[in-house]
Amino acid sequence: PAAVEGGTTLFQGTFDGRNDHVVTGGVDVVEVDGGLVLRLADDFSLDGAPDPKIGFGKGGTYDTSTTFTPLRSNTGSQSYALPAGLDVSAYDEAYIWCEQFSVALGVAALR
Image 1 (cartoon, rainbow, N blue to C red):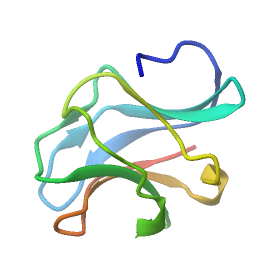
Image 2 (cartoon, rainbow, N blue to C red):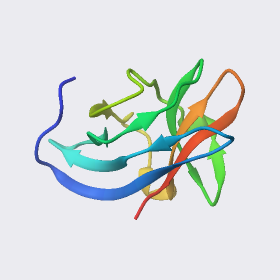
Image 3 (cartoon, one colour):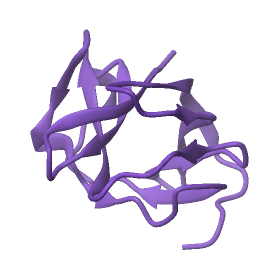
């Protein structure tokens, strides 16, 4: 999908790198037309990993059941529709997660 315009911002944060990875940039979760979309900002950047995915966690622990999509690009603005059954309000962090090695690449506290 192309960049999502408008909508109501529910959560937002900024990525910090983990496990010797550099991940920077903003992220938000917006409600658009009754659905939720995770948006990575124009300034998003990941230094690279073999199998980056997006998901959520709480209190510093990634919840593997929230992994919902591969990362399409290591840089720039991107939008991803969230699965209908995913309760984002149950989590306080967005993750860029390397599924192959089961490690966090970047974490953003969501407020």
